[in-house]
Length: 458
Image 1 (cartoon, helix red, strand yellow):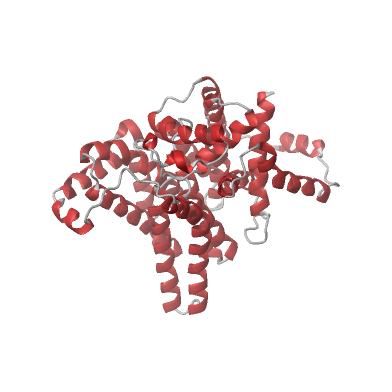
Image 2: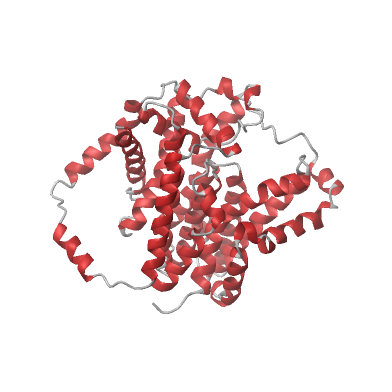
């Protein structure tokens, strides 16, 4: 029975995402199923969490019928709209018989085994990572128990070390699954994180196949998803890899928009980078970085008379508007409820930077160490990506993709400023957080590097 309840909770998330992404505004109907299904789930987590947040604001207690109803209605509509649809098993069997096996399939099979092992691990091993339980699962358990977002509890000293101001997307989804289960079971809840990891694999593989060969796409997917650091964060209950997935999807669609100029690709990019701000506070700096490179692209396009001023302003406002529409309800509530940020003190930014100039070589040195010398965590991952970026530099800087590398440079610059201002011991803060900040950039960086460095005729 618990499996049925779990499947129901995940199915509602899929339906919620489909409800949004099947609109003409986003329209992904021309994409293959292995691209659409992951996007439905990723988008559904945003829809479910925003809907639950809205219910809490209007004082409607969380319960399965109240949350499920609009999505069940849409599911019924889909059933009647497609009532003549039939599954043809003969076509499926024929596709299997005619499938030509090749060695890249071995890599994909190994990734399937990895996902299966992660799923088993999620079911039998409880949450043990400190931040996972003290932040995301702690909030989720309170939301599940209280059947709402209890701002009075979030403003109490109970949350002094649990980041009460952190966004709610993950915690609300965990609370939703728990509502469906009818109980709190943190081992089962870890499946939510494993599902995101597993679903991102086919999305990444099939999308990068638009740029490189099947063989190279399999290699790229295996290098990214077999990295032990990403595997660890794929199911340990931390938000960093989910943030990285949403950022990667946003950057991928932004790259697509640079080429296609189809509005839906820009809107999809905006939606997912906006959702990243509802996952973790770090998403705000990534949103700003994406907005800056988009603005630079639009200014350059206007100067070279490729677009009109009105189109440039409209595109930028559309991107900002969609992202902020996702994030601002939460941020407004945080400000109105005076929920504190225990990590930020009242400081003079410029004076603090002036006082901390001695930190510059320390921070820069640690950045380089983590990227290129910490082989325990990354196993030469960033070295490999850097080599690919050097190989593919002409492809990158000879096209509109040339704006994407600046996204990573700006993001790292924001992180650099944070470490210049931090009130925590610098060595502790760097060691504790920087490798996790890189996880938020790794999937997008891998896509850029592999799609340019391994490009060939397909």
